[in-house]
Image (cartoon, rainbow, N blue to C red; front, side, top):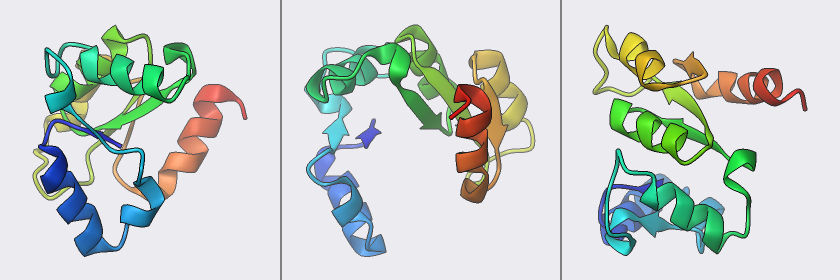
Length: 119
């Protein structure tokens, strides 16, 4: 998981939701790179650490800056508009920033990845 938030905050959030076990030790924060989003630095850092080619990565993002960063990194961005902070115009903003698809419910993620990658 890559986040613009400080690593300690990410860890606490994942612990409180019971999701930490799915991501630890693969937690990354923008504090580990020189430039945050919309620069691609964080996503490229994660790909390098995980020894994965950027073109093989799919990024789920809920901000135009994050979608732009994933796109600039050569990754496939999927926009997410299901968060409580979203506005009615967010889907269009994510698409304009480069999202290849936009989902409002994480239950649609698997079928969206299959549609984009053909897996």
